Amino acid sequence: MSMKPSDSTENLALPVTDPPRDQDGGKLFNGSAMTKRGAYAAISYMSCAVLLVLFNKAALSSYHFPSASFITLLQLVCSCCLLYVLKRWRIISFRAGESLTSSDTTTKFVSLKTLRHTLPLAGTYLFYMIVTMESVRGVNVPMYTTLRRTTVVFTMLVEYLLAGQRYTSSVVFSVGLIVFGAFIAGARDLSFEAYGYAIVFLSNISTAIYLATIARVGKTSGLNSFGLMWCNGIICGPVLLIWTLIRGDMKMAINFPYLFSPGFIVVLLFSCILAFFLNYSIFLNTTLNSALTQTICGNLKDLFTIGLGWVLFGGLPFDVWNVVGQLLGFAGSGLYAYYKLIGK
Image 1 (cartoon, rainbow, N blue to C red):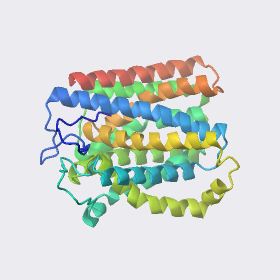
Image 2 (image 1 turned 90 degrees about the vertical axis):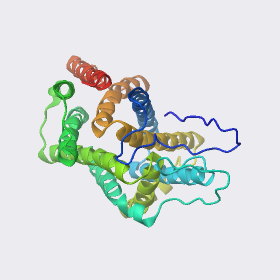
Image 3 (image 1 turned 60 degrees about the vertical axis):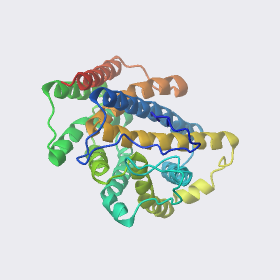
Image 4 (image 1 turned 135 degrees about the vertical axis):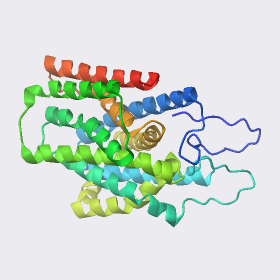
């Protein structure tokens, strides 16, 4: 995540914002600068995603914490608190191109009209989160990974339906290679369970809609990535709180025996910090690049996640076809990145 230092001689922390856009939502930087910023956003997302998975894995597996929903709620609350503090201190802004000066005494956040404008984003996020959590239950891990890789296809379809986005044959080939690699990786475990498969595909659709909504709302709301995160948290926070209370996750979390263990607190702290930067990089990567690029980055980081997870946590048996499939998926992601850079 690139935060450009100010050239001002004043001892004021000027707001950190996304790259300014013109009235049509276009970027005002030249192509080379935007390519670099887009690359930084993609790399930031993948780095945060890999590290967050490892810390969440440590909390849920190593410490056997019983509720992933509570961790999600905690991450959302910490994110909103951090955004509030940074905005109050005028370190960041919530609107694209917004500037604060030493004479500014107001700390206006967002209007009710803007919150209403971002309701589709919050709704798709909640739908995406609930369905994704449910999708893990009905399908074994190899098949879950395989089916989730097909999200790229759903993302392309959603972008075409919502924005009329068309892709070159080179991009379509790279996406096809990713999906083919995913099915090679899961070919040894093609057990069929109708409900599980249906939920995973529903999860893929919800992910694609969520990413496409980020791109769409980000261009029409006038908010930058921090502003989108704030609105999403303000709307979704109360809903998630009610959800955890109804499901009994809050009670399980309070009764967790290692809740105040120093090691567990450190793991939760890093999890919340990484979740903040991950959410920011998702919004930034999706608005700077595209929903499809964000999905491809998600597939690419899986390779690093699997490798680090195997080294740190073990438990993953070696399988030639799984390795071949993962490498094909990695090659497809690399080709997509290459075609994106050269504009084909």
